[in-house]
Image (cartoon, rainbow, N blue to C red; front, side, top):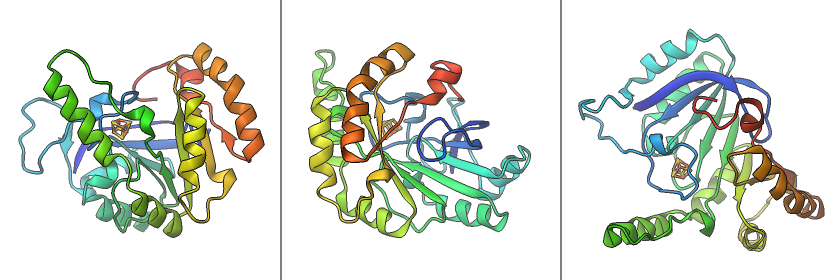
Length: 242
Ligand code: SF4
């Protein structure tokens, strides 16, 4: 399983904000979100590929757990990239449970697998995530946008994850237009618990986050959703491994 980095920090988003955690960042993602906060984790690698580019390491579940054990915290966040696209995640979560770890999985909700976890943190990708078409290498940019648009929404996967796991739905909100789309989106699913819906401003600095909060917070209050500031930006700034 390709792993980009393993580090400890504080969970900055959602239900378990503030929890000291070990973050396992997998390498590879099927999407190319416009606002991706970890583009360095998008590159897809094949299982037997040599690490010629010095990016990440291909580790067994035992090797990953061995590194996690050194950090001595009880909560593991498996993030990416898209961790649910790696088949080995099933074995990894089973092994972590043998050691009694509490597990969060952070996913875009486009792959399903019989993992074990305590919180399935689903970040559905709205139309605001689709990369813009650029004039540079137009055909490549168009195919990236098309591929993203075709793959970003898998309602059957999201509904199944919601049924099987303790879940949260975490939306990235960029403009007021997104609020209407979120309402329509949530109406497609059964059993949505409003307190499990988190709206997070698309921002990489505190000022932008504060400005967007002015219209996101009242919307959350009206619908029983939770406003979700990206606390890692407030605590550490827009830095990697936080
Ligand atoms: S799904 Fe996540 S890792 Fe993949 S491109 Fe989107 S934001 Fe980045």
